Image (tube, rainbow over all chains, first blue to last red; front, top):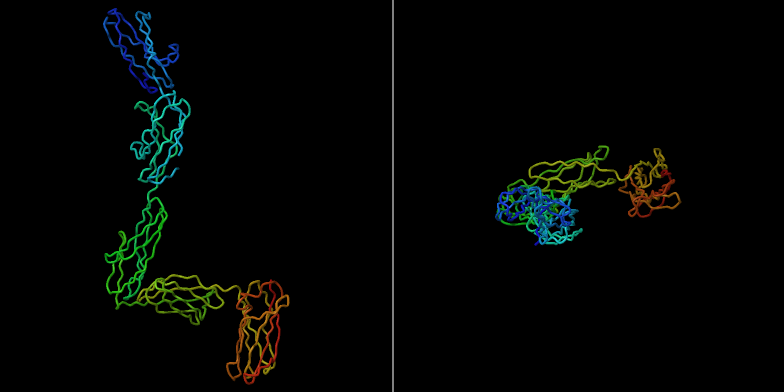
Length: 106
Length: 404
């Protein structure tokens, strides 16, 4: 499913996950990329959370890039400085439209 | 600055690039005076971004309210505004024509039964467009006449309507919010006096000038004649008149308009411009019976092309009947042309001094002085003892002058 998000707008990525290590200090980072994750065009930064051992939600705010394009969302989960897992939501595109070269004539 | 008539539809051509390709968008062009309130809009026009420059055509019906409008463009997708723009060029919507009567002027304001007044509606177009309006005129509350006024936006003007009153009384004339009155009565002084002077450029009064006054409403015409000082006077029926003066050897004056009010005196002076350069020469001559012709004060003159020379011939008549049969002008090429004037001068048996006047023109030609050179005049004199048998008793030529 495509989502249209405006350039510069901030959206919350609600990351729902279950980490079976209660009490473990972790970070989550949601970022957007158009090239398979190699280049981050927007990121939530590392959002700290503590694993509860049950299903929990981590909110990762992301400011959309000013450059228009089609992006995918990626998620990195780290704990103790080690990347625990990576996820790619390549089924859903994020469309960031940008308008330019506007001229009105009558 | 774009100017569009209120209520007219115009297409705003929006050229833009929306990245990336394939986004379902809407565009809306809207007009506003304050940046907030929408005065006119194209509505939401759907389009799909091509990722390249594309054009969307947005029809907009101009607002009815006159004014200057800012033009805004909103681009949205999924119900959210992507971007908003303001066009560099504003749109001006002029107002409709709005012709209203400012004042009513009635002339004259006093008439006798069956007299006519002129009702003048003084109007201004307060709207933003040129226009025409048929203005109803009410007299004592009854729609009696219409005045048709055509005015450009912002301009003022007047329309005149004639009205004849048959009954005595006071008449109130209204149009829009303006009103004026006039009275109609047999007891009113319905004549006024027009007087003035007719003078030439030098300020000298012109005698026997005709002054013609024509009523602009009913065509009634009056003729007055100036006295030896150029003064004239006349009693005219109250009304508005076009007046002009004319006199021999002068151009008719331009018409002047004057309003004659019953019981009052109006003054109108005229200054007439001489026709060309009229140079009058007094040529003294005597009949044979008096011993020949003399013209001691004749001097050759220089004239300009187009001049009309008026020669007054003063002569003493010895024979019972005398006439100058003709004055011929001899042109530089030798051609002789008969001039206007002269004729028979035999007013009686008594010897005496008489005059004859000649012009260097005829009824068809305004002047004979049409080529440069020396012109002569030739006179022929005829005498008779019985006014039946005439004989040429003498003739003479003089040099009229040089024309250059």
